[in-house]
Image 1 (cartoon, helix red, strand yellow):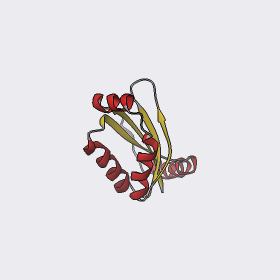
Image 2 (cartoon, rainbow, N blue to C red):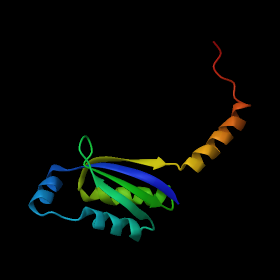
Image 3 (cartoon, rainbow, N blue to C red):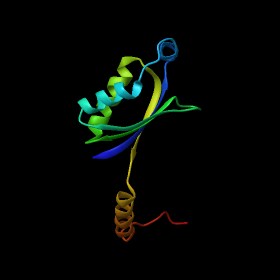
Length: 110
């Protein structure tokens, strides 16, 4: 399974609703992600550009996209983004493959 970082900004209506009636959004997000075959590891509320950040493990890009589509279609978020993450082990494997690929690459000539 792959890891993803979702960052999002709640809509004004959603923020208003959360102030008027506080809700456990981690439970709601976890239920959605589990229903689609993934796992919510953490959901954090943030200061700054984003309101929430989540660390999600999903079996495929398709499952993660489905999660994002459900949330996006609900109108809960005003915006957001998903970043696919790599473990250090996966990054090391990519570095080794790059080392091999470098042998057949010709950079731009000066």
